[in-house]
Length: 116
Length: 115
Image (spheres, rainbow over the protein chains, first blue to last red):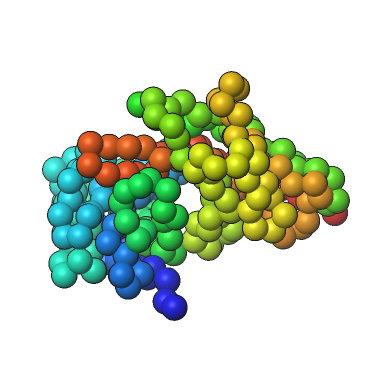
């Protein structure tokens, strides 16, 4: 079956612009996660969804970042007023369930965001 | 709180020699531990996972890892390296949040394999 897909694969934007990143999880996966992979920072957790709700937003770096998930499927990560430090690869993952914490998370190919 | 430390940022081996990638973890709970691999310009792929069953876990492509609670370690090994093993490897611990789970990644170890 299809894996996790993300779009766009690459995004170049100017500082101060808003961007939207999209994630299509594996069909039937109730849990969806966003991570950011930056040079020198490794992979950091941003936010996760259980269905359409996001119980844990602790990883979002600032209030310029927001995410939503509709219909228990597609998720959008929005970054407002982008800054150069937002440049990174944004990864989406999905898993069958949130608990127990043993389910494999399947990762998408990522969106490479470059803020000029 | 959970955390994971990969002890080597870069490991270089010759083809056909053993691979050892070291990982130590810290967890308040009985952890779930994973190793993921990321090949250049490709997505993250699960190599293996430990979930409190057998302490020696076998994964794909001949990799295995042993969970040692007394040493809080989960080192990744392979008896004989192949050129295609060159990639970045991440040791990961699951983090139990108040209502869910996220993965806490180590900084990664880049494995280079020479012929």
